[in-house]
Length: 284
Image (cartoon, rainbow, N blue to C red; front, side, top):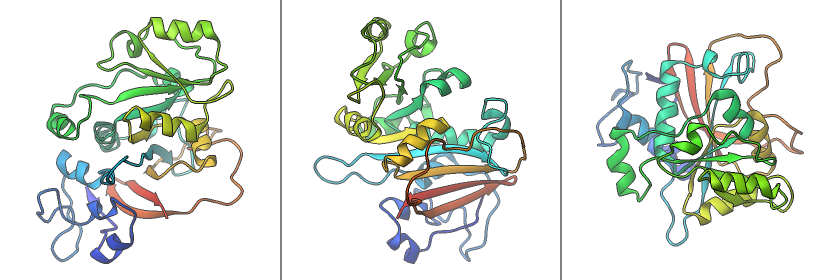
C-alpha cells in the first residue's frame, strides 16, 4: 500500500484531534509506509499500522466526546453500490480496512435497509485486536446498532440469535409497541432516540455515548448517512474510491435533502492500493 499524502508535523499540528496518528511513522515509531526521504514505499501494511493510521482521537478528560466516523465506498462515477450491494465495487484491501475500522469501534451504526440488502451478521472476534480492545475497556467486539422507524426486522437472523454482544435497535418513542416487544424478546436492546417514529441523529449519538459507546462507526446506507450529514453530527468520513464505472441509477454514498451550506472536511490521509484510493476526511 502506498501513502500518497503523508501528513507532516506541520499539517498534523493543524489537523483535528487524532490527525497526527496518520503521519509517516508506525505505531512503534518505525518509519512505515513512507520512506525516510518521503518517497512512497509499496508493501502491505500490517494491521497494527492500519489501526494506528485510523485510530480514534484520544478521549478528553472527564466525559469523553463521542466521535462519529463513516466508512463508505464509491465508484468513479459516484455509485455507492452495484445491483444493491457494495461488494462488487470493493476490494480485498478495502475489506481489510473495513475490518480494522470495525475492530476500533465501540458500536457500528447501520440502517435497517442496509442490514437487509448486505446480509449483515454479528461482528466477530479478531484475535489481532483482542488485547487492544481489552486495554481500551471495550467489549470483545463492537455492537451492531440498527436504525429503524418501523422495527420491521427479521429476528431469526444471526444478528439477534447469536451475537457476542446484544444487538441494539435504535428507534423512536412512537414506534409500534408490539415490534419493540418482539425485538426485546429476541434479545435486542431497544434504545429510544427520537420523540416520533424515527431516530433523531444528534440524540442517537448522545444516547449511544451515554451507554459508553463513544467510538462510533456508521456504514450507512446512503439514506442514514444523509441524515447524519444533515444533522451535522458526522466527524469523519473514510471513503474508498473504487477504480470502477457502473453507470445505472445507483445511489450516491449519501442521500436525502441537501444541506443549506456544504460541509467542508479536511483531508487527513490518503492511501492507494491497486488503483483504489482510501481517504480519511475530518471536519474542519
